[in-house]
Amino acid sequence: MPEFSVAQLESVQELLNQYPAGRQKSAILPLLHMAQHAFGGYLSVDTMNYVATLLGMQPVEVYEVATFYTMFHLTPVGTYVLEVCRTGPCALAGAEDTLERIEAVLGIKEGETTPDGMFTLKTVECLASCGTAPVIQVGERYIEQVTPDRVPDLIHQLREGVRP
Amino acid sequence: MSQMVLLAGVSADPAQQVVAIDRYEAIGGYEALRHAMAHSTPDDIIQSVKESGLRGRGGAGFPTGTKWGFLDRRPDTPRYLVCNADESEPGTFKDRYLMEKVPHRLLEGIILASYALGVHTAFIYIRGELMWLKRQLEVAIAEATQAGYLGDRILGSDYSLRVVVHPGGGAYICGEESALLESLEGKRGNPRQKPPFPAVSGLYGCPTVINNVESLASVPWIVLHGGAAYRQMGIGNSTGTKLISASGHINRPGVYEVVMGLSVEEFIESDAYCGGIRKGHTLKAVVPGGSSVPVLPAHLALRTAAGEPRLLTYESLAEGGFVSGSMLGSGGFIVMDETTCMVRNTWQFARFYHHESCGQCSPCREGTGWLERVLHRLEHGHGSPEDIDLLVDITKKIEGNTICTFGDAASWPVASAVRHFRGEFEYHAHHPDQVTSRHHPIVTDRIVA
Image (tube, rainbow over all chains, first blue to last red; front, top):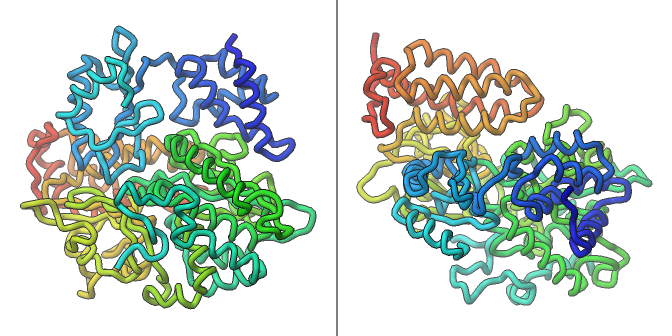
């Protein structure tokens, strides 16, 4: 069973206090973000059950929410999750070429994780970065204007532990 | 001229940023709030915003002052202001830019609006992907509280306000205001049936106003200079300035503040804005207001069917209805040159809507999937001539038959692409063996049976 540290539980309490009395269920999205970050980068059933106990909700209510929002990963992911935007404006700027280059460099297809557990490759819809397309989200960072020629260096840097 | 209201003081020079509160104050920040707390009643502010003619900048264009006027003021019930910062409409990145460059202007607008509406708790619902901006806004809130602009007894008055930044989880539909409220209450983002409208029964069943980032950030200027001065800018019922986020095949993608009424042609060609179509290419199509609005072919983007110059206003872009016009929408201005395959582009937008449909209403849940699949087979060389009318038929079965306007938003890009670029769809349908690669030739001629 995953469990937050004492310091994390203080942050949880601060979070809950942000919402009006009796409306603590409102905290579910920020809490799921926290839990995903703290417990391995994805939401296991155990993690979702834990969030349910923190909010006094039924586990099924948490599953219902977690499965609706695409930022939550419901299966294990690599150390880095590369989320490549593929919506119209990014596609106009060559996002399909960028995606193909990433697949070639990593040797995996969209939706897969490299055997060493380092990278998971996903496609996402519009990230509100159309003026600096193509864009990839890695963790909480946007990497913008990722033309195919930038891909090998980017992957190399991530492998070396240089966070973008 | 640009950078007048929303981006005033914003510089491209990193050394001249106005993110920190002292820098924002140095360019006149929080003067409107000081002025209002000393001289204005809440009704004065509502009156100014009504006078200004400001219309909702999220895309719908509903007059902001009128929306504020609808707020139910029943006693003993809290009222809420929710700032919609869930910017997710493809082609739109202006709210992100505003929050990145001048977060205190949004905050000042929220404080003024809250004071006007008698709100003591306001929420900023920001898309979860923009976590660094959530933190930046929280720093801004702490700074403003420290300075006495927020928190208990603002600037020595008896008015108090708390602002909470709430992250979404990656769902386009939460930009729809009732879905946003569901999400903020801790649920899936399924839009609500209206009525009741949020002004009567919104967040936690309480009266609620939901305004876009850009709308709220316009309020400090209006309060300081007056609604009449704001109204002086623009044309007719399109008053003031608008942020346009330009992307696609142009030389200078980015966010520009324009006075309403600038011509589309000048916006595309001028070096102050898009800087023209990328070298050696020609304009083919424009989506002027975010992916949900009808796409226009070059000639109708630049001029109306009647031959008038097309302007960046609510009215001019809508001129001609859906036969030959479009909408200003969110100001997400997507430019395409002659290398763009309209079938592929339409398929990619249809995939977006299928992915983002909340699944609550069957016409949208099933219809968006149909649109994506039919467009996919046309684009990948498995289509047939009947598919083209099938697409139009599906859009008609979705449009108007769903709880929220997402169904319309999913239908319009497809219907307009077929209307204006039918030749390309026919080429795909009649020459499937020619379009199996995504680098296939672009042939736009109509096939005459």
